Amino acid sequence: LLPIPLTEMEDVDFEEEEEEEEGNEEGWVLEPQEGVVGSMEGPDDSEVTFALHSASVFCVSLDPKTNTLAVTGGEDDKAFVWRLSDGELLFECAGEGGLACSGCAPNSYLVTSVLCQLCAVPQGHKGGVYNSLLQWMEWHPRAPVLLAGTADGNTWMWKVPNGDCKTFQGPNCPATCGRVLPDGKRAVVGYEDGTIRIWDLKQGNPIHVLKGTEGHQGPLTCVATNQDGSLILTGSVDCQAKLVSATTGKVVGVFRPETVASQPNLGEGEESESNSVESLGFCSVMPLAAVGYLDGTLAIYDLSTQTLRHQCQHQSGIVQLLWEAGTAVVYTCSLDGIVRLWDARTGRLLTDYRGHTAEILDFALSKDASLVVTTSGDHKAKVFCVQRPDR
Image 1 (tube, rainbow, N blue to C red):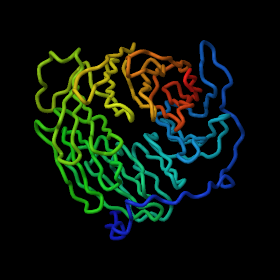
Image 2: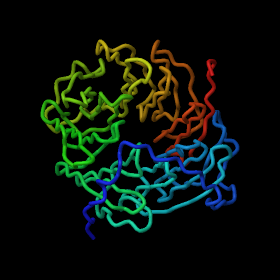
Image 3: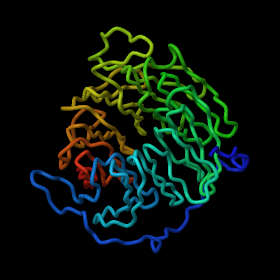
């Protein structure tokens, strides 16, 4: 099957916010509250443990309207929608090959991606991708549109719920990470060959292409944008984080951890054996950026001076980091199964949360930063209540 070229996509208004719809709580199918664990042996700081998965839980996403529901996907080919307050199962969907990522859209659509198949879109879809491993996906912030990158180098954009789609053809290598810019008109995609492309979503053409010395010398692992979309931060296995102007497509800064700063430059296609950039992001209230490395280093960079401000060490590799909205607090999860909160102004560890017996693979933060939801290789998802003196 081949995707039908999208002609209607031009009708999507990427600038106007979708009107919020009333929640359809009556549509959920309630199930018995099995799989919810009340306590575990050893220290466990979590309020709720969801234990219906039978294998590693790869990903989590919260419903964007109320932040009261979570969807988790795992190696057991299942995605579960469950309630954060008590872990009650509300809905289940299954795939084949392991669910790699999942997400909830503002209009209450739920999408789960499957490692060996692709992406489950609502019934009646006209376009799909087959025999191509899905690498990432993200909902458009302003319209009922889903973007996803695949191992063949393409980025796909689906109009939901009818499934009309268009493709953005990249190089002949996986599209490893991507992000829709805040204006909703552009997206930045990173590739395995180290190139970066900024796409015009309406026209379907690349506005800027960064390659060679402007790109990375290894596969990209993560990408982030600042609040107004003027700056893009990209990370790679080459241990570099590059600051890019979204307007000009030019690299305006390069960050490397001090621990590997003396290493020789990697040749094209070579990867650092000991370290890589795993996650990064911008602070919303100060000119700061955080970069998390596989060697356990959390680096806080001052964007104004492009200098290292703080270096915070973890006991094991960082998997993901998230900034708390409206503050200078950054959250990290790591391979030691611990969630940590850091004050980026001082570099001080504020607190940590424990309870998993294996590595944390993903986590999500509620909008009011009162809850952290984690997924782990111990087959469990956990809800932690964040206690802060200033809250």
